[in-house]
Amino acid sequence: MTFLKTSVAKKVAMAISGLFLVLFILLHLAINLTLIYPGKEAFDAAVEFMATNPFIQIMQPILALGFIFHIGMGIYLEWNNRSKRPVKYVNNNPGAASSLASRNMIWTGLFVFLFLIIHLLNYFVPFKTQDVPDHYALVTGLFKSPVYTLLYVMAFIALGMHLSHGFQSAFQSLGTPRQKCHKFLVCCGNVFAFLVAFGFSAIAIYFYFN
Ligand code: HEM
Image (cartoon, rainbow, N blue to C red; front, top):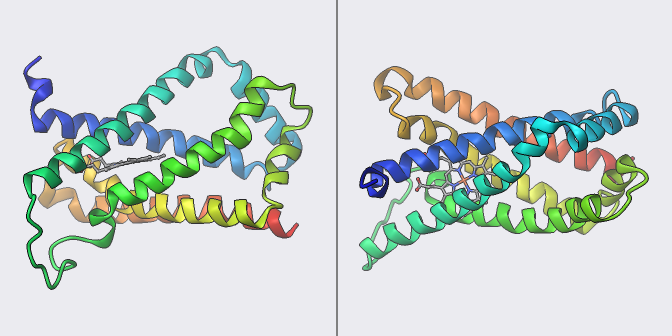
């Protein structure tokens, strides 16, 4: 029990929750891509599967807990780091030791969180509370709003930035040997971050114009 209170345990828990969310976002992107190809029928079938499959039903509350844990722990770790360094020291070159993405994890995370609330209100709540006749029309219809589409693209650029640091950081927290794997994980993280930001944004922009 005392182990769970150590900062190493908190980092490991943060990494596991982050990688769990990475898996979720990958599945989400795969489903959203069916909006464009093969199209409506495939997307409707995917929604039907997600709504009825027993494994997915079990995973839904676990995913919600994963989000709550990751956000809560992210805010706690940030607050903890800041309170340990109450006096801001002068740093003329903040980029020298850390990347822009790593210094702004809390802000990119909070922006994604803000968007998540809007997304839940626009899609998940009607999905759960109303008898939505056409999911494809509901999702693609949201992209007709320029404000929603802009916010959507900005949120996924923020998530891409979050992942460009978070992906490799998670493996580092889990103890992958730095010398051997660091460059490879940074490369994988950047590719994954780009695919997420570009993939989700491209779908939104496609439906805005079509
Ligand atoms: C789908 C959404 C998200 C994904 C895929 C994701 C993924 C990750 C990953 C993989 C890490 C690296 C963990 C580590 O360093 O061991 C991380 C770190 C972090 N995340 Fe997220 N995250 C998401 C949403 C959020 C949200 C909504 C917040 C809101 C506060 C947030 C706040 C943070 C913070 C502050 C860190 C750095 C923690 C530290 O100092 O080690 N994340 N995230």
